[in-house]
Image 1 (cartoon, rainbow, N blue to C red):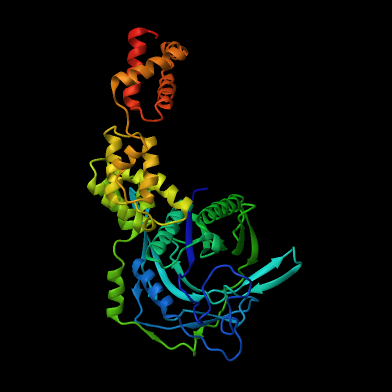
Image 2 (cartoon, rainbow, N blue to C red; image 1 turned 180 degrees about the vertical axis):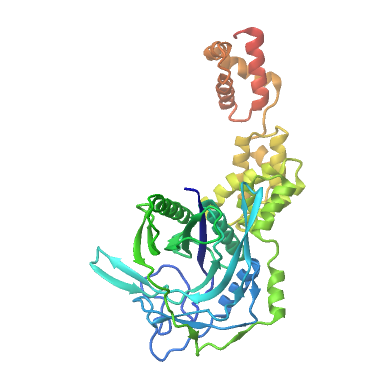
Length: 483
């Protein structure tokens, strides 16, 4: 059966504010249960919400980054439903006049060679609910209100995604954009990026959508992709067996890698929205909108395209650099000052430099590394003054000290030895002690040259010129047969 996949998403992004949406409690992950809550975020009678201006500004930034139109007059509504972790009996959200309407997310596909625009319905602000805790160890269940009232934006797409791969690219684009702008940290492990995923199948080319099933509250991008692939298989098997899809809400179990039915969708839920009387209409001037728009600068998708076009980077490296403003600044400044392929600078930044940053749990701005010194080091490798092994030692020093790589190479004894007579003497000794090298090479096992070069480098403490050593060893084998 030839079927088209149709996917729509509601992406919940936790905003990176200092306090909660309607009170002054800390917006901070973790902590002792119910240690970051007050009368307002636990819904005590007589309390009044006080709207967080920072949350509105971050939502505005997100909306402009995703090409939305901004409502200059926006309102907040009460979404009425009962659940134990929602103490007020309603959630303060936006329905009638959300802050951001329309818009689209541009995703890059097939290693950046193609792009697709996924249109949005809206982006609206709302508060998070509490969290139900079921502790088998303590034999009790309770509600932790630390998360209650945490500010969110919900990014609602139109049903225009057609595969798990497209959905993954869509989520990665949103995550990278939100992180880049400081709107959210999008830490999956802390639940600050969650998705409700709507999946349906329809006959190929049909204008009519199939029966929609929803996978609720999936955390993370890879989990979402696996959940969608599982749901596509489930619906395909049902349709191919001649049965009909029932509209259901599903729960995804990431450990078991499968979904289970939570409830049937018998009817449209009626939330009885009405404007919250405690929060006035919010007016945002056109001047304020334009000021925020100008502050966005070049966004990650635009950067990826430019890095691939102007520097010849791979799609993967361009994407990784575009996630971090400090790394991309280091890359571009290094590439402009060096006489080497820009990809080499990207390799060092994504490789050893990122490793050191992760090990020390610091950012680039906390290190002493400069584009000039990184450029000099890469040039020294290209000029055979130092080996790649030596450069790994040098870059550690460059991260800690504002010092020239030439000086580090001299101090550490890392300058590469290229004197032919000295290298030939070492090569002869290695071949004499390892006669199997010549024998195996003559039998056609040319990879043995790598072993011989490695043995020479050991004796030279990594200072030998490996290219020159390989040439010398090959010449010795071919002209003398054996040493």
